[in-house]
Image 1 (spheres, helix red, strand yellow):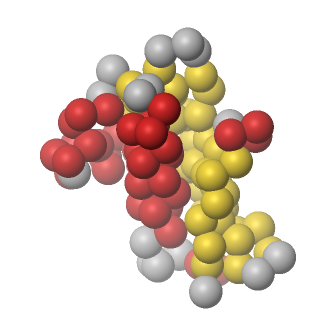
Image 2 (cartoon, helix red, strand yellow):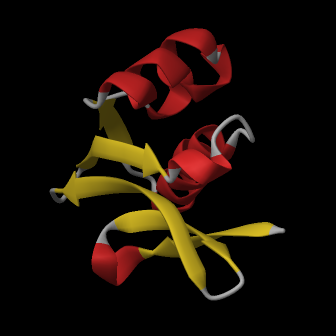
Image 3 (tube, helix red, strand yellow):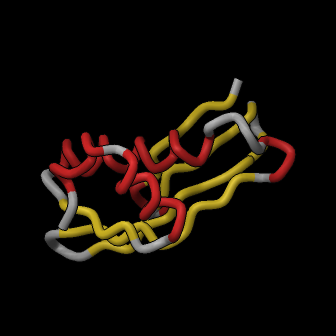
Length: 91
């Protein structure tokens, strides 16, 4: 079972299979917005929706922190285009 963990000190949401790191979505931050700049998942874990869960975790945390997001990485940009429910956090 892959677990998604928000790691604010590392500026990322990370995916772990037990103790094994399997992917991340990273962001840079300013005082008012975050930029999702990279999303990657180990090929062995492809097709499980993990990348989408990583972006979702950053969206959830942004809502809690009242931050806006610029989805810069191609995957995050597609997620934001597909999921209208993310529009509330778009910068």
